[in-house]
Each structure stands twice: as structure tokens, then as C-alpha cells.
Image (tube, rainbow over all chains, first blue to last red; front, side, top):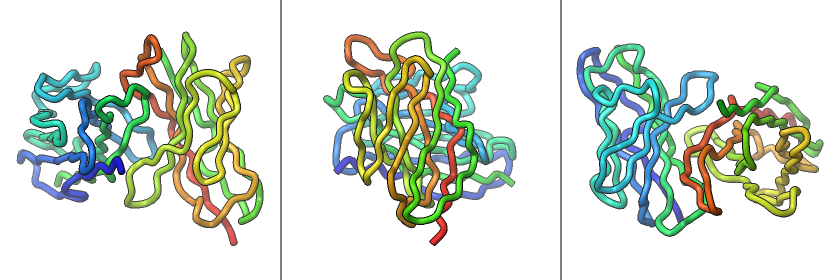
Length: 117
Length: 118
């Protein structure tokens, strides 16, 4: 159990377009979902925290108008990269905290690789 | 600011050999500590975690880690490595937790890539 799935796994888009990445918890309810970004040969950096039904909380330095996060249900969160530019190319990973699970253990998706041309 | 350091970017071991991956953290209070493994094309999987109590924790796949407060370390070990252990390993610290409850915001180390030779 505790499977998190991301879609798409890879996406290539033109500069200036918007791209939506979905994160779904397949077999549990996720009260909180987290979005991370991973640059090549670097660690995962937390971008934002989203709670079902409320606005996302962004980490310092992350543009909330560029990275739109919606957590519409207990099983789905979406990240939309608006007006994408080549510097937004990265590996985006979501994770979910299981409802009722008090500990810090998170369940991670497979990641989505975004390439902006 | 909190930080997690994994000094070794890439480690190569022979199958059957022992393994130790290093992790050092900088954190002002009692940390919650994690080790995750990431295989190509898969999400991060939790190997083990430390919150309190016994400083030697056992995880899945035969891994263990020891929390040493005096050294601010949480090194991951395995006595005999299998070829299937080849992956990238991440140490992580929970940034916010209170009263035994975590908020789930993790700070990750840079990762250590493990290569296993037959």
C-alpha cells in the first residue's frame, strides 16, 4: 500500500507554455502533499506544501505565481508551471503524508522530468 | 539553518562487501532522521527512520543506521551488499516536529550513488 503516482513522467514543452503535473495517492488519503524540485546532481529542494482544500504554502524563494499548486481532493494535487522557461527544466517530485499518519514518513511519486525548449 | 551533508557523492563496492554511507546534519534540536533510497524510474522509498529511543535502528532490506548525537551523524550500514542495492541513497532531516508529531517537511542531503560490482 501507500502508492503515489505522478503523471506525466516526462514532458517537453516550448518556452512560454504552461505544463501541469499531477500527483495522486492511489490507495490512501493524503492530507498533505509536498512538491520537491531536484536539479541534476543536487538534492531535493522543497518547493511548497499543500493541504487539501486550502492554499499552498511556498518555501522562500519559490514564485507562487509561476508554480501553481492545487490540492482539490485527498488523493490529488497538481503543480502547474506557468509560462515555462528553460531554467524551469528540472525533475519535480511529489510526496504525500498519509491521513492519520503522525510521523514524518512520506510516500514519494516517481517524479516528472520537465524539459523546456 | 538546517543542513544535511552526505560527503560521498559516489561509492563503489563489490557484491558481498559491507557498506557504510555517511550522513551528517546540522540541526538545533533533536532531529527526526530518515534514509531513503531511489532506484531509476521509481520514487523514493523509506529505508528506516529515527525519532527517539534506541540509537541503532533497523530498516528494510537488511539496512541499519546509528544515530550519534555527539557526532551529529546518522550513518547507514549494511553488512553484505547485493547487486540490487545499487541505487541513490538520500539522508533527510525533518525540519519541523513537535510533541511527537511531524509536519513532514524534509531537508535532504545531496545523495550518494551506490554502484555494486559483481
